[in-house]
Length: 388
Image (tube, rainbow, N blue to C red; front, side, top):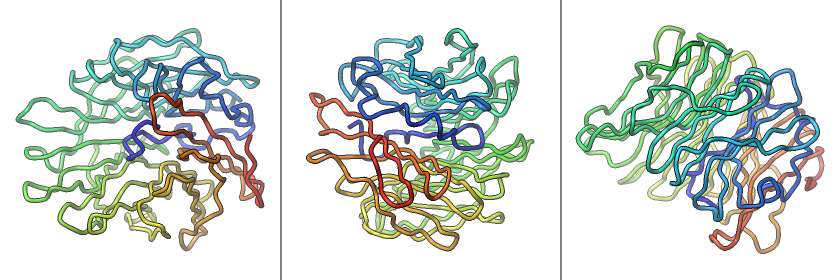
């Protein structure tokens, strides 16, 4: 499985502001990770096409779980279809984010290990490169589309050996992509990186990531930015990590209905032991939410069906599926689907219709190039998990 440490971007089932239609999910059966292309295929992000049954899935495909070329598949309401995508070069290339506003308007971002970031657009017939002036050393990690003329992407760039990683925010206004100013809390002496973006409206967006906390601090601090329609600015966020090398980077952000609440997940360290980090925006400020054990766990997928409920999925230290639920007051552990015997599993994604209609997806494998990962899909009916 590709980088179980958490560097693998979480698989996300989301539109610009919400979960995908659950009716489209059952067609994504177990084993799809191999059957879509005949090779090892990792689907990293999903995006629902609004007001349709169509769903985009993007990631990479290749002969091993460690390298490949860009990959896209479209669920047309009946079945998954592989759609050709240009891949920038022969290095390790992958899509990291996808968003859609209509059947003939979708965006995907990604990067290659040798040539950096790229942006592609779907016009209803084919994927093509977008003429975006992305800095040469940029990695783009996520994209969100509000309308055809309002699209955003985030990541980071390493401009020179002297000036370290800087946050990158790109905006498409319907005519061209351009870089928008974004805060860098440690601009001159440490890394600044954005990993995820969520939007409820043109005047209410969040982006999260991490930054090095200073010359004398060797760990990463959580980084939360907000856009008010005019500019991006940093918002105070909890950093509960302790120890000589504290770590609090954030990897995913999702907004709740109407944008009144938001959730972010990442990783925190307690005296060197890794644990899941969960932050919640309560309408006024970001607060840390207690995560029930065990430690050394990672959370990737978030679904926020209502202002008072949320679901989280990931993996335990032993690489078994992990499911948590916010009941309006606290996070509680839920019974998770069982891993296939003899395999390690990792849940990346959750989509919630109701408490008795929950889908989770992930991958399982042996963490070996000779053992291709396969896709997991489970449904929860309120009582038991059933593999789809």
